[in-house]
Image (cartoon, rainbow, N blue to C red):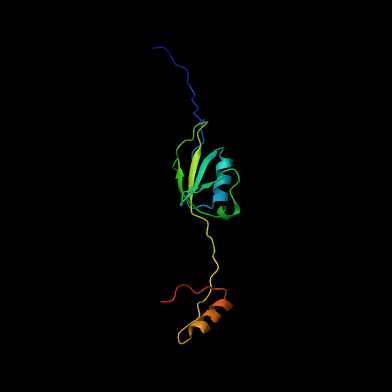
Length: 124
């Protein structure tokens, strides 16, 4: 039998593996993916609104990632991209504490509402 020489084989991955970004703030997730050389092609919020992956608006930057594709640990081949779904940005709306109108006449109730910037609707 011929004597063989020892062969050393080194295997390296040519594609990065998708990290777990679920639950991370969008800004942090995008930074981690950029560090791993993974491009993000699409970001949607849970209402279906498109969010710009290159420069997401300020109101979305702290939104948590709810879903990622590909899943954690999957290789992301050259030319492939990742996609993310994030929570919708919170929108605060002005609120007014409604005063009690019980016992007021209609003109008195209108005056109270007018002072708060409210409009009296249909009265039945």
